Length: 144
Image (cartoon, rainbow, N blue to C red):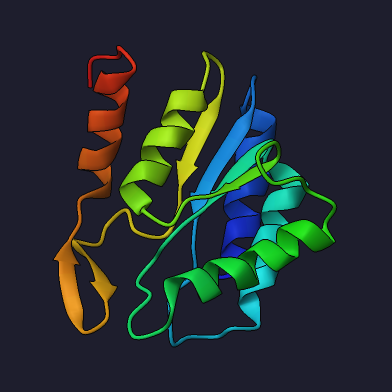
């Protein structure tokens, strides 16, 4: 995804959300690095909490990607641990976002929904975002 697409979906969800808007997103490795901080800047405008996480790091250092995204959160005046979280493991990021959600909140899982893998190095690691969300919902007591 791009900062523009994230802006469109978050700006659409903001007025529809009675509670907090929580977003989970990352940025692919070996792609446009300039967009990384912009993603967090966009999330900073709309989300009450966002979780920066892995999304196809490929051969690039995942922690470097996360740091580049986080720079946009910092420049927007957001506080780590309060306004945003950095969680490298995407499954854990999804679980944490859902764990923190309360009735009336909206959780957006952006970037991997329809994809069946996460590319780490040269390996395609099986991935099921909807399945991860269902598991997280069960863990917090919702039937999914």
